[in-house]
Amino acid sequence: QQQVKQSPQSLIVQKGGIPIINCAYENTAFDYFPWYQQFPGKGPALLIAIRPDVSEKKEGRFTISFNKSAKQFSLHIMDSQPGDSATYFCAASMRSSGSRLTFGEGTQLTVNP
Amino acid sequence: GAVVSQHPSRVICKSGTSVKIECRSLDFQATTMFWYRQFPKQSLMLMATSNEGSKATYEQGVEKDKFLINHASLTLSTLTVTSAHPEDSSFYICSARPVLATNEKLFFGSGTQLSVL
Image 1 (cartoon, rainbow over the protein chains, first blue to last red):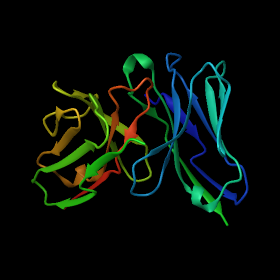
Image 2: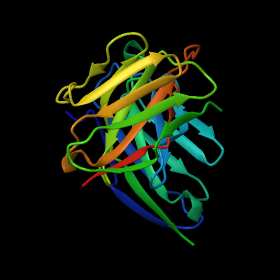
Image 3: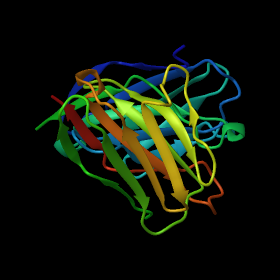
């Protein structure tokens, strides 16, 4: 059962644009929501993470918006650059399960020059 | 930041042979490591949770006798794919959580591309 649904599957933007990737979860016990960036042939790298007690978190050009009532969260990438072209995964976990992550399906982002 | 080293990065083997993949936490200790499998253009699927000094916990549908996991020390976990077949060809990734971590932050290895001929 897919507990974290991610959209869109792929996304193309121009340099400087603001791509937005959305995720929705089902399990209300989730209390940690990270976003990962993955380049081809590499492992994922943590970009930013949020907990349900805040509605927004910003780190550099990356912002997470979190809507607890709707069970949705999204990643915004400000002033996107060609180097941001990668696959992005949202994920969720609950404290009681340690760091056992459930990943979304992934979004292939392409930023054109 | 914490570094997780995974070796080898790429391996090609013949059908029926076994392949061992190592996952090391270089500058921290990890009582728990995780093994994932990723097919092209798909998400990461958790295979098993590796616990130092005890048996691994496998996800539903993952054959524990085929994917042997050993976590003999606080810095090393190994995944052995036994009697590999072409359908086992995939990208295998490990992750580790520092023992002293106060959050759920995980550090990932760079992955191992396994190709079974």
